[in-house]
Length: 118
Image 1 (spheres, rainbow, N blue to C red):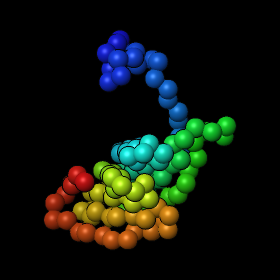
Image 2 (spheres, rainbow, N blue to C red):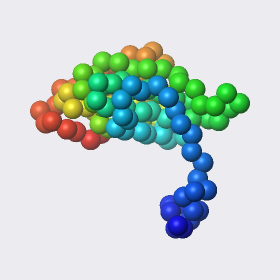
Image 3 (tube, rainbow, N blue to C red):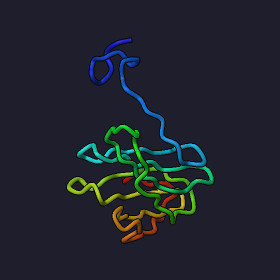
Image 4 (cartoon, helix red, strand yellow):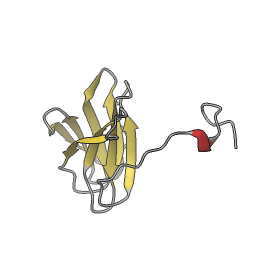
């Protein structure tokens, strides 16, 4: 199977499993500089996890767990100029802006719809 987005066969692409979520992952997003990976949990795991995406001898490591949503995380988006600011949208009808250095939400917006993409 060739063609893919890089032209390389899919079997040639490097993969790495990250452990930590307690349910299926609904969303993943690399920061613009490629140094961080955010993952959003589904089911009863309503957390957002931020990973160091750079390969090291120890593998990729979990940087932080962001908690506060009450439903599955559906969408993630990094700020285009900062790999420390992340937005998450969930089925709880909220969008949260996170400062990943402080491990806290800097703002929350309630939305009228049931799902939202950021």
